[in-house]
Length: 76
Image (cartoon, rainbow, N blue to C red; front, side, top):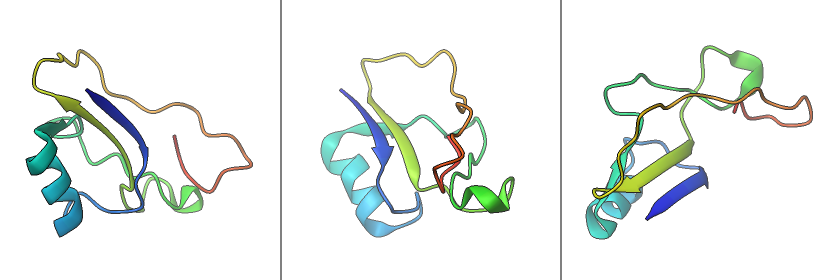
């Protein structure tokens, strides 16, 4: 299972932690950095609300950001 997207919650919030626990998903950010994505105008500051979660049977070799389009208020 792979869940990628704008969840509009921080990794420290209870709903995010409950999602991880109940679905058995790991946050690909852990051990790789904070990856703040919103608001893009405050980069590198901001909060991580865009997430990539994986089930335990998936191996993540690289976790990075894409270049964000100017029309978005999120940093990829």
